[in-house]
Image (tube, rainbow, N blue to C red):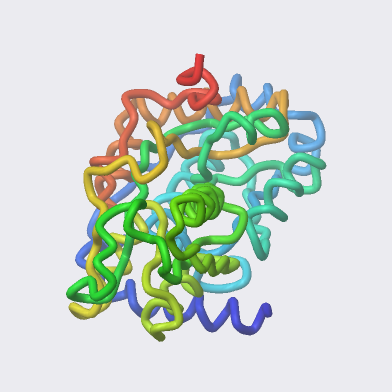
Length: 298
């Protein structure tokens, strides 16, 4: 499984190397140490001078894994900036699967994940989200859209790839029930450990579509040399307003520190520089916030 994961990682890294957005084209300002904010870190992090960020594979353009302990992308730039502000080394811990990542943070095995990971009310019962992204969920399909999938309602009888444990999997399984209730064929849900494996399923014609966040699917389509296209744009596709962010243990002091650091990056313009560098202008929030999905539900 791990060998396959590294193969998919290499595939994505190679594919994105030719992207129109290159890390060297935009200089990210170095961040000065904030001693007062550093002093608020949990004692064990201060003592070690380092902390661990969990990551569950490539989610371009936020995370593009280039090795077991290395990645590039918007989240990598944010991790570097956070480390500078807090004066700590941030190590990466690769995790296979979103469910394992969330359980690891809940249990305290991992201190946080930069994500961004989808913020949903049910998830907020066990972890906290420091939201810094607004996302939309769409479909990547073969060029010409042979199955005619233009929205969630068109997926009955189709083979739909999703990332295992993600919000899209929950939505598409609910849609499958809606299909059979209406005497239509069920959706064949194919849940994969990461984004690269999911998009490979479409390229290999094992799946009819990949149902996921707009930002990474845009990147995959751009790098597909005209073989893929996006559909379902401008539709809710089973979602209300969708926020994504970093994840910390429920009630953790670290959450307050990460929020303050992200607001600092927002205030000094670095947040906008990083997001625009990676083509994420449409995904920017006015200001980072905590558990925004729960606040929206209220």
